[in-house]
Length: 149
Image 1 (cartoon, rainbow, N blue to C red):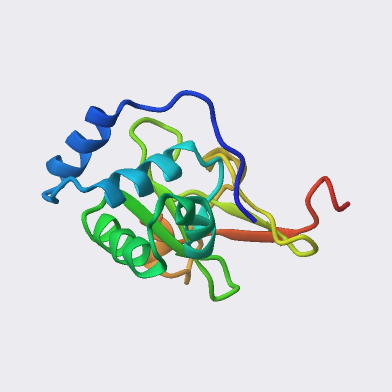
Image 2: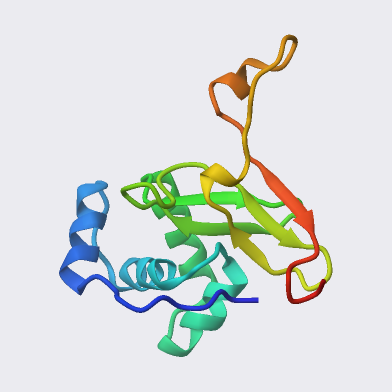
């Protein structure tokens, strides 16, 4: 299920500059993928992006390759939320989406939501892996969303 879109989007030149600054060539498919991720309010799967961009002439393979390139360049984050489906979201400057943050997946409808970093407190305890203290962990919560509850 695709996420709802936000309102304001950066201009074409801003997307092109982001792509070039990451060391990639600015191409129409890369700009299209970034635009779609920019307007998303939750992580999108490859299938979500194919649904959104397929009408613009971009095929599955082109979208996948560009997702891979953008992820490797550090512009996009990729996460598996436990259902063996990679979901992608734009790395954003500032507090929102600046790094890893928790996600909530509805066990009934499958909707995925980004949660504010403050919504889950992670503390390291004696005997816990060092990754917890370094905050190098991914947090995925599951339960019923407000709509399904």
